[in-house]
Length: 174
Image (cartoon, rainbow, N blue to C red):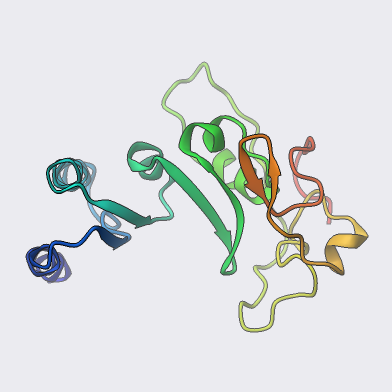
């Protein structure tokens, strides 16, 4: 099974005494109990062996639990990079904010507005000109359709957006 192959891959990877491990969706398609066991094992290994992880995941709840720093990508480009606490408390890129708005919260007192993205995901093979997120972005301006924004400092984060941090009202109007 895929789970057994995954378990078999861990010891050989550690035999070479790596400093960095790349973990691509290590807990996807697992029940919550198994996820917790894997994450606890990874934390113990990290502490004992002084490992750094590059943890690739679409599960933001897991990312929040394991990461020190977070990098958000859209169609292969970094759109935001920040410390975990900074990114989850003060997301600045519209894509990051939409992702976080779709993440369930356990606390019923913390109601958050859902940012619904409209339109189809652009082709990664033939992305649109300018910012790849522009066809779905609720903050798009003409410059976004023409020029690719570079990562720039916004407080303690690096963000690739001309309108980073601006208020998003409702869902995309495009």
